[in-house]
Image (cartoon, rainbow, N blue to C red; front, side):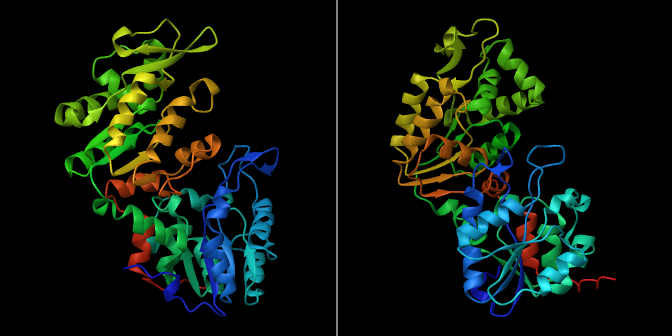
Length: 407
């Protein structure tokens, strides 16, 4: 059982809140604040109830243009929360502790990017994570810890599993909602259809195996790179361009797994009937029986026949769970599959969308009307296969040791 904000006596309490506000950066500015907006409910509630809030988060990876400080995130949060939000360019050192200790009731400070410190790239068991510099440096000035970062809950890093081993831990509103909805898939109305697209082939095959073996899925519809791998496994010649991409991404072994899955549950797995390629600068659709395409042409989207086929299956569904775009939606030539397939899914009574790239695709295409859009990609996939999430397990287990006082 995980405690939530309903169980936390907030007033006068100094709370470390882990959020996931990792956002695209364009020209030094936030290009999309959707992830920040997702956490407004949790942060607003804590502040309105008199909490003293220290925000912990990461942004980007070393070497990337998006590996930046969280100063601009603090500014944007101030606008979204309609109150001042401080920022300090430290996470667990003296400056950070002083900034947190100086908070008054209803005040908030954003601490520096946790990934500026090497420990945050390592995976630890909770008790070991509680002994890292990040946790031992910051925990002494905190009274409680709230994890609202569902999207990173499949990681076992110090900011996610170390604090709840040293402090009373609670789920924020985002985390609470995700666990409630994704953890109750078995209770959703049937027939139940899963749509698995995008490029996370190993994860998608794991999900397909799990939901088909457990009888959770009446049909699994494949698209994107996932669909291409299943087509190759079914003996379709997609041409060198598509096959080389699968090989270069390290997915060649996944073809055998997809073939085994087709042998075991092929009657419930839907494969594309046609694909779209670029030919002479235009979208050109080819039926699978007419493949391979011309040299250099790659399967970039599902085609019209596939969309009609998939729509028929969705028309009979009561629940649809979607993860991953149907094609290279960033290219105007190949956005149609994702736009129309996901648009059709909004007509289903219960429609649940995995996060990550899928949520980004829907925002870009302006597709709305789903029952629930998850904030997590990898974490959502883990939940759909009933795999434990380390950050959630850490909250369930609660404090196991006292944090070591900072010297």
